[in-house]
Length: 299
Image (cartoon, rainbow, N blue to C red; front, side, top):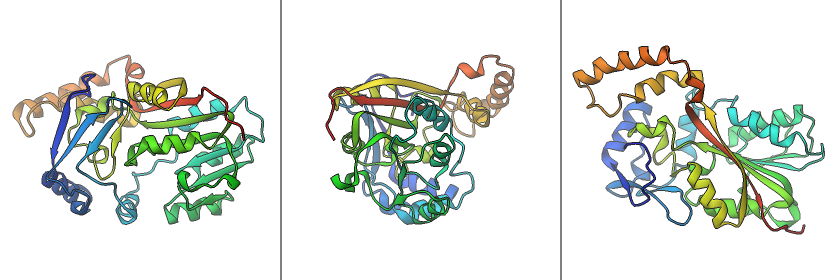
């Protein structure tokens, strides 16, 4: 797959059998049960601007347990955490903050350190939920759609690297917006489909059953309009140092695999990038968006 272009009519395709074999080879995970069709396709939805995968279903609990066994899968320090805390800093200390998919509570830890006490998390992974509770956070085994009116509303609903895993991200955002107090905000992050990641056709963790959609600036703008929300801010993560090698390798991804041209070009690309002085101007892995309601909702 090439860079995700602005042509919404484009459809990208992957052979399901090859996708399953690559998951087996790289991660020792059998994903055939999540790939019921012969091919997986990716196409930008006209109404929402979101790139949606078809032909696959989301991974289940055992699938994610297998991924979590890899030490590099979950990073406790994320660029978007610091960005989100900046959006909280002018709020009163009694602001109600909900994080959906809170993992082991790394972001909630930052919020508590910043002086916020009314924190809550939603997390479906039992091990992560247990670790989060051991830190003293309130966390429940629920989805945002399962929260009832009696459980209150929030000033901020945050979801970091969550949307891309969901089969119905628009439904999720509609439910999340419905949990906001008057003047509340959604703070969201996803991998950036307009970054170097798009050059990798076989970036397995950016494909089903791990990811069910891809997002870029256009996705967030059109989704905000679709849901009657205001897009207050959107920003790209600068290229992180631990992604320098991946970025350099992506420059030759279009060349035939195992070809002499590719083998020769890879060290040249790495060497050239090593001395490139404007690395921080390159869009990195993630994108963050802040959305709010256009019309106040009473609580």
